[in-house]
Image (tube, rainbow, N blue to C red):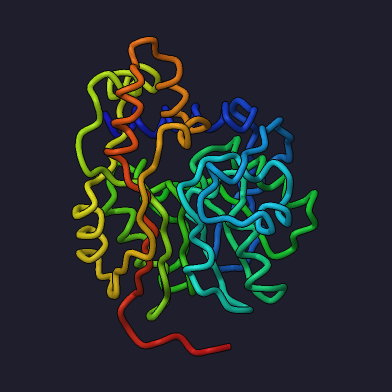
Length: 293
């Protein structure tokens, strides 16, 4: 029941962040034959611009070349450079939101490559697809889906990226197993995510639970890395590690729940920065190296 409640809360929360309720969704085969992709009804949303202080890992040049509105300040790093993407590759973004990382990846894989963004929220996927159409992106598409049950064939991707999404998944082992399954042997996983190095203050946990109706459960640093290794990933390396302050959660649904609580003290906010770490991680699916294109 907790898992169902959490996913429902995430859908509703991110639909609202995208400026939409439950948008119509027409499932259609619009991509390569090994994918079942969602065709979203294009819709616009008013999205506040976020400065670099809370878009860690990105440069001003990065943010200048993506469609306006794709940077919603919901990430905790930039998984794209670490993925070492090459021209012509097939890339999957787990929890793609408004498409920021997909648009950056699209430039790296070029017109012969393909980037697919997957999100649980109809509103986010619709917004991202609308931005892709407006920006003239021919090699990017977005679909509705669950990170725990990916609608893609085995060994179909050269790279999988994710930005601050897997920490929200109820069954993280299932999520990493799915990422492992869809990667080709030698394929890369690049994820930026938050982990806990302590316990959040009770007032913060209560605020999030009251705001969402349930409480997401990020892993400890050791637990997160251990799950990745247990799912078969090799060369699991931490590329970056830094505290994740409360102000950088401002646009997230958990952050909004915290802001809306009158019981959160300034010391509680400081404790968030001491308790939550942002990690950038790179791993490889063990097996033969991919053929270079």
